[in-house]
Length: 487
Image (cartoon, helix red, strand yellow):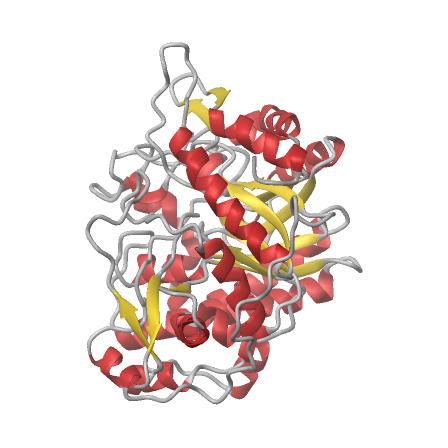
C-alpha cells in the first residue's frame, strides 16, 4: 500500500553522523554511470503486463465471516484515535462478496493481471496449525474467476494483516513469527500454485516495520527503541527469505517468487555522471535494512556502523536465507525519497532540500516527482543486476468529488499517472527490464490510518451503497492498456 516514508527511515541523529563518517561499502556492484541512450519507441515492449492491485484488509471486509481470525489491524482500528475517521476494515468495500463484480471491472478495462493479497488470519486464524477451509475456498473462487476472465493472478502472501494470536506471542519482535510465516507460505504454495504461478512474499517491509514499530501510526502501534526495532527489521527480511525457500519447496514447478518492496529512491537533482552515481549510492544506503540485504546477502557497513550496539543479531545462515535467489523484484513506487548531488566527502552524496512550493497530490506525503518511475527500476537493475522487475504499486490520492452527473473527473490523478508512465517508458526504452505495472488501486478502500478519508481507487465506491463507478482515470487506464502506451 502507499509508501509514506519519505526520508531515511533508519538514519537519524548519531546514526546520520556515523554514516557521514563511513565510506561506501565494498559490496557495491559495478554500475552504469552514464545516462543510457534512448531509442525511439511508440509504446512499452511487447508482452508488457498491465494490471491493478489491492490488499486483503483494505478491500475484503467480512472480517468475522467464515472462520476468519482477528488481525492486528482489527485490534488497532478498535483503539480510539488510531484511525482518522474512527473506521475499520470490517466491511470496507466488501470484495469478499463482490469479487465477481470487481473482476468484471478489471476485464472491462482490459487488465491482464491482478495482484491481491491473502489474509493470513483468514486461512490460518491462529497463524499456525489448523487451516481454515472456508478461507481457502474464497481464494479458490477468486482465482478461478480471474482465470475465467483471462486475468493472471499474482498473490501476495503478506500485506500487513498479521494474525492477532501471533502478535500476542511477540509479533515481529519474535523470530518465531518469521518461522511461522515460512510455514504459512509453504502451505499456501502447496494449495494455490496449481493456478497462481506468481507469488510475492511480503509487501512493503519498510512501511509496516517503520510505521508499525517505530512511529506507531500503523498496527500494532509500537514505538520501539533502536535495538528492538533493528531486530524487527531483521525478522521481516528473514521471513521473506524463509518464504522464498518455502515456495520453492512446496510450490508447483514453474512457480516464480520475489518481494514487493517500496524502494526508497534517490533521484539525481541534475543528470550528470557524478550525480547519477551519487543517487545510486544513496539508494543503496536508503534500503540497507531491506532490499539491499535481501539482494546482497549482507548489511552495509554504514548501516551497521550507524546502529552500533543496537545492530541486529544475526548469523551467517540468516544472511544466506535472507538472500535466497528470487525470480523477480516488485517495486512499489510513488514519489522520490530524496534528491541528491554528488559530494567528494563520504558518503559520496548530499541531499538537496525540497522547497515549500513542491507540489503534491491529496496526500501531503505524495510529492510529485514522476521521474522516480525511471530511476527506481534503473537503480535496482544497476545495483543488484535484477533481470525481471514489476512495478507492483503506483498510484495517487486525489480529491475525487463526483460531479453533478455522478462522474469523478479525476484529471489530477490522470496527470500524475500519465507523467509516471512516460518516465517508466523511458526506462523500458533504455532496456531496464520492467515486465509489468500494477496500478494502485482498483477500488477506493480502507486507507490504513486515514480510514476512508483518502481515496486511491480508479473506481469510485459509494461506501453507503457499495456502488462501483469507474472514474475518468479508469477510462484513461483502459486506453493505456489498449495502446500499450501512455494515453
